[in-house]
Length: 243
Ligand code: 3Y8
Ligand code: NAP
Image 1 (cartoon, rainbow, N blue to C red):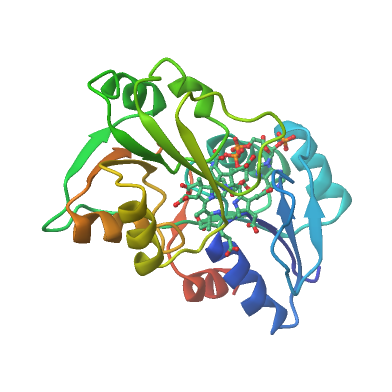
Image 2 (cartoon, rainbow, N blue to C red):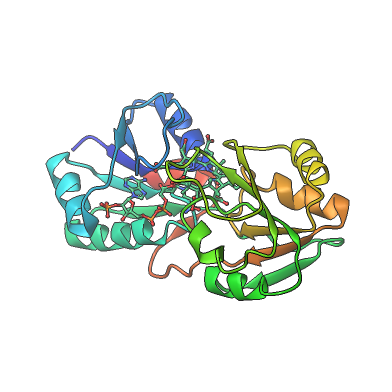
């Protein structure tokens, strides 16, 4: 049966893989949850929206005769990744994860690492700070108890219901970002703490580099652990895996 690839997308690396695959004779589709207004342009067919859990994904795989599944979603998209592992088991088609190693602190970094959003929230119950919340809009409400801070929120889209911090500024921007842009943004707003997900990769690292340059502390949220899958970290290895 000819190879027919499904890429679970939503990251810079997924877009790069789609571009590489479009130069081969492989049939491939890239899929997105449909969370943001403008999905990046892709050179291969796009599919937008959830599958309906692991069973929905398994049915899609069988109906579309998918032969290989590449999970190139974000390290924090744990539910999608778990569904991909389950659907691969149900259908017997091979699965590979294209992910990025977590960032490691470098000399000059001031990181305080926490295991999840809840621990990040409790870390913020302290004297007023000027905080850049760069974790998107899905988890903003968790921080509403800590109204004593000024918040700089960077979001991909302006949310329908505005976030409810008493002292906030919203920066609508999608990455990838540059360290110079982020340094200017952090200085302009006199930020003294960044809350970030350990996303890995280059697409959202700019603020971490800028923080090092400016001596700003980073509250780094560790990624969820996803077991029982093979992980690759570069496009070439995925092409080799496809064989
Ligand atoms: C919908 C559509 C590309 C892809 C770009 C990467 C890099 C830029 C930086 C900061 C952090 C954040 C957020 C971020 C980045 C890349 C990559 C990455 C972080 C898009 C995309 C989709 C999403 C979903 C979106 C979330 C949000 C998270 C904003 C596409 C642009 C904070 C995560 O409802 C929502 O608003 C959804 C928001 C999930 C996290 C959250 O919890 O809010 N990404 N991001 C995908 C879909 O529908 O399936 O791929 O074009 C993709 C990208 N976002 O090359 O153009 O590869 O990580 N995205 C984080 O990583 O910290 C911003 O501000 O520094
Ligand atoms: P999630 O919590 O793991 O997924 C929740 C549900 O969204 C999934 O169960 C699935 O719905 C649907 N979904 C997620 N990714 C999908 C995809 N690529 N194609 C089709 N459906 C998808 O994921 P998330 O954290 O909300 O992230 C959503 C998307 O944004 C992901 O594709 C991810 O790559 C991208 N993204 C996320 C972050 C982040 O910080 N979380 C950062 C950058 C980019 P069904 O169960 O109905 O199939």
